[in-house]
Structure formats: C-alpha cells, structure tokens
Image 1 (spheres, rainbow, N blue to C red):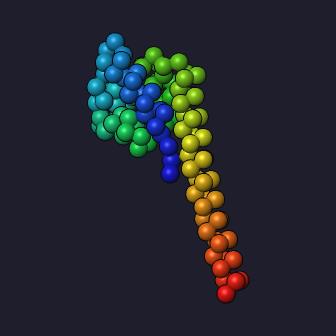
Image 2: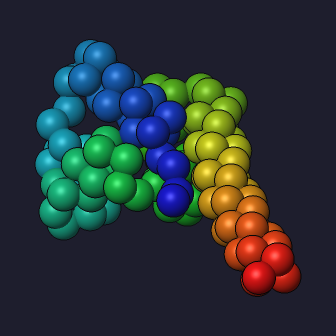
Image 3: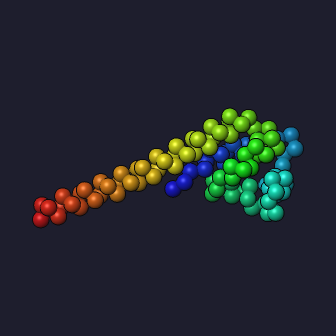
Length: 104
C-alpha cells in the first residue's frame, strides 16, 4: 500500500498555518486544479503532489524544498517497507505451504 501520510501532514499544516490560511479549494485553484477535491485527497493521504507541481507548492505554501523532499522520501520509504513486508509474508506462506506438502 502506498504511503502519503508525511506529505499529507506537511501540506495540511502549511496550508492551515499559512498567513492567508487557504481553503482546500483556494489552494487547488492556485495550483491549477478546477476542483478543491485534489488538496482534500492529498491531505487525507490518498495521493501525492505531482512532481511537476512541487516547486509551485513550495512557493505558495512557503515550504522549504528540502522539507518537501524529506516528507516525500519518508513516504517512499514507508511504501517500500510495506511492499517488502507484504512480499516477505507471501514468501513465508509459500515456504510453509511447500514444507507442508513435502511432509505429507
């Protein structure tokens, strides 16, 4: 399962704490989206900020680019850990099933 919780938290904190206190719809519009649902989805951890939008998000919300990068890297690490653990679990179950077949 993909993880977007760090970027979600960062975007929400910066949007709400910004001097202009943008609504989700306002921020979505500034970023070129017609629907406020985009930022809602980001803040709920359902999707990530597209790479082509990172600079604009950084500028609009006054986010240090390094902070944005770190949040995305933490999410990427969590995603990889999740996939690897899932694959390990499948591999472990396959080995258990194979051992049971051989013992029978």
